[in-house]
Length: 574
Ligand code: SF4
Image (cartoon, rainbow, N blue to C red; front, side):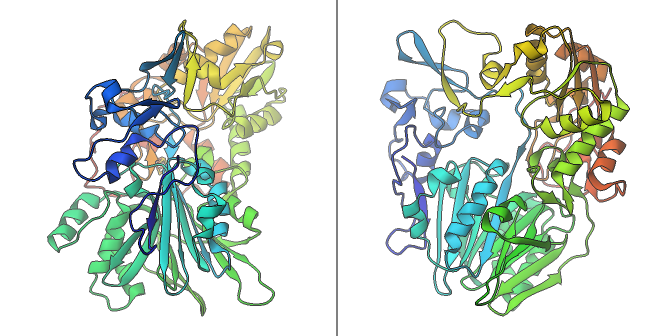
């Protein structure tokens, strides 16, 4: 059963509602978050089997590792008391239900996607469609808030957009304005209360906010605000912006928003909504993307839309108009669109959006992601050519760069690894442990293509190295005579503090080992990364000065004072 949090529905404040039956169960942490103080924990389920506290002893879910919390979603079954990732729980004789968390070497994960719709008779459904297109930016929770000039309602839940927003649920969200959010959390815990949009009653009226990014001076601000009497409803950094608005001395709402945005530092692309207005803003560095589009209405004013990526506009049939600029605050009312530069721009946008996060069919910072990725592959081929028989992408993220590499090197491109797109987070594992089972479940080699051939494998990053090693082994075991790994960005040597979930520096293989040492570890015949210069060139045609590249250099574009673990482990960069 998917459980939802309703806000702004008279008589249903903070209540859950079962939307529809699901084969698996909502993470236990959601129940914990909203269970009345002192009440027994709700039963948690593993593969549809009920393991209540009595079944599994007295271990508290609070003791679960963060990694376990991160894999939780409505179709995930990890979060049972006493059950941690990788731990087996008997389901049936001869079979084991196993948490498929692959904690050893995950991909870097994006924080969030945001959307906003102004002036559409079915705004909630438009927001739903846009969030559906942005699902790759966060799969942990999603929410939509709508307003009709008088009321502001909000529904959010844990899980995928399509799992939360059934027809019945969307029908309850009335109004011609909407904002939406899909989330993978990097600050605050992942409980339902921290799902967004966050709806806060403030001295400036009712405000809903949805935020993509990460604030880096939140600790100080939170303490200051609490001293001024702020009462935080969530542990999410996004609420700080709303509390700053509420405590601003400015007399108009738009001035209060500008005032609050000037006080926060870090990455934020935000959309906000009051009962009758929509706001959209980006931080002065423009770390995260945010685009504005328009649906032409022949019989009245246009519908104005905002989204983290332009791929969301296509489903809405909206036309891309422009990016919200770094340091810009846009307001949309029934009188039209107005804008102000609330802070001078100093653009250092996240280059990793072009490398990995954004969809290739999106335009980010004025350039198509597909063009950038293909050019990364071409540049990689120019920088680190090696004789081989086939170029094979690690699907899906390596595909576009591999197409570019193959075109530039004149070596045939083939899908030599096939991805299973239907792998869930929990599976039935054979009784006999299978080496590298997790990767084998997701990827399978095409033996007749690989056998007896020299292979160039293209991937977008190496984080800890463990997954790359498994993939190289898999290709070799399928009969490849040589395996050369090419990475379409420079070595990742530093963590991100701007809304991307990266491991600590001590866990980043490239921060601690030379390229030759990494090659030996992953058991490749050769290993090469794209140069930083090559990456910049691929993403902007050579201007090269508008990107954050801190995870490749360790030089951060902001002063950051309140982030834990500011001084990472000493690095030995090869
Ligand atoms: Fe993007 Fe890396 Fe900068 Fe983070 S540190 S914003 S991932 S380029």
